[in-house]
Image 1 (cartoon, rainbow, N blue to C red):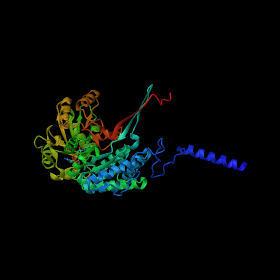
Image 2 (image 1 turned 90 degrees about the vertical axis):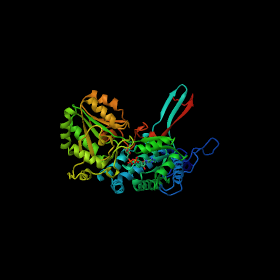
Image 3 (image 1 turned 135 degrees about the vertical axis):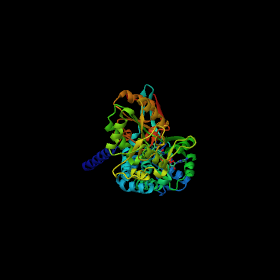
Length: 498
Ligand code: NAD
């Protein structure tokens, strides 16, 4: 009898301990790859959200049809909606791990397909993408508590998001978009740039495979493997897509804004730099060289033209030479411009000749019969303020420098060159008055003082980063919260514990 009682007590203690330690009480804890058991309603039936707990297909996100891609992404999103936040974070982390662990191979594949930019920077950009992809920790909940109870404000998913990515960083943009969108509870259908479609599809396949193996959900990240403007338009019009995110030039931003859907648009930039007479010229030269030459000037926030007050113009040009930039004469700048930049048509801005976007400086120099050292990362030279090198978003390592009579004139000309994109601007100055004056006047999303433009994305500066800077629609550097809908839940007169 005593023995039986002892056994009974031991069993009870073990059961209680196991419940307390697991934190799941009588409920069945979720197994790896499975949801927690759904909560039970008052009448004993499940009150779980409708929809399957896993998606059945194994397409690993590869689709030629927009309709099929959206249907698959919708199923995947409903399956994910039944999973915990911890499982969303597992999906995010798998993407981060793939782009970090396979950065060299994926970076090489991206370069071999697109043939633009500086090869060593391709893997760096993937590792950087993993670092800045925030995931679930980027979400938050606000709470109001008072005599009338408690109100929660949470950030819910939109559903399936339509995504357009640029050729300048095809996989890094897709990867960061995917992490932040999945963290916020969404799935996505991406129409990549046709010139970067293979690496986008390959990356999506790796992501989906890993997520499927771990969580049993396929197609959270769907890619149109043969993307065209027509498939982009199908995405823009699809009734099951409620939100768009586009990263690209003015054409795609205009098209997305015409769709009538909620659109987060990371559009073009033409970031100007102003250097005043108080600046530390050696530091300015180092920063401008680093920021403008990164990946051969492909980044949308890279320095694209420099306005220097006349008092320090020559010393600034000499400082650029000291850090390794190759100075062209004004005649050589004109000659190269005719080859690399198309003049603006019908009142539009001049535009880069696609053949030279992201080209190495040595390749640009060859166009005008020059041979420059292999270590040189950018060309530069003097032009006037309305020159096509200044007005075009060149996306190649050749930087125009403009001599200005006064600081105020430099700021005016910088604003003119920025075209109201509201993207990025940079100042080199020791005068707080000048920094403030330009910051207010230029009105850009990112404004960097005394550093390379990259510091505005947390690279050598404080703060978080991203490859999509939604300057056109005002959301700024995107985070998981950018991809959420505001939801409020109010409990009246109850639930306060104080
Ligand atoms: P792009 O505009 O040529 O193409 C971008 C994407 O839009 C591609 O997928 C393309 O196929 C698609 N597209 C273009 N026109 C379209 C239309 N009318 N309808 C539907 N889809 C269309 O740009 P790109 O050369 O790939 O990338 C460089 C541009 O992107 C630059 O202007 C750069 O500043 C900008 N960009 C901005 C950011 C940012 O965060 N703000 C980041 C990267 C690139």
